[in-house]
Length: 224
Image 1 (cartoon, one colour):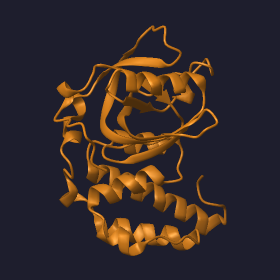
Image 2 (cartoon, rainbow, N blue to C red):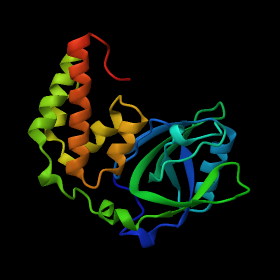
Image 3 (tube, one colour):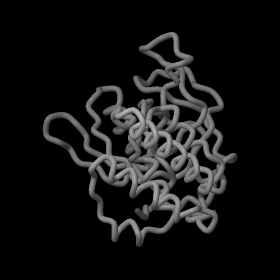
């Protein structure tokens, strides 16, 4: 989805951002993530995002394996900054919104703040390639990706718009499949931190092949 703001590189974005820790949530550049916001602290975060004009929120996963306080979990070091591109009020106090991914970021430090939501100082320069749409598409093994996807759909008795999938550019295809994949936080984080589109596709293929192998050999349900 195109966005009204033009971000040509890290210098166009703030160094301090609000963050929304959400396990299993994967946002990638130019990908779309729907969110149902109902907690007061995150309603305030959305209000402030519009008030400051940036409309930016950093999606990041809690790192449960290294967290001691469940009420304030440790965060992974890499997340993805998204811009609010759609927002609707539900009528019962919730916001229904959609984030469009802009760029990944590395957490430099979490700040001590008075806001009810968490804020971090971030560095986007390690991910400068995220600002170039469709970078690295030609390196993706599209044939294998589609074969594995077809197997996954058959095993799980799922149907999709295959014509739409075949028409999708590699970046949109890889990132959409990664974001929608049913895998856990560790696998999602690995796909987020992949250095390029080719590697992200390879991780997605490998994880899916392991899931399929488990399903076929043991009869267990696929990873959720």
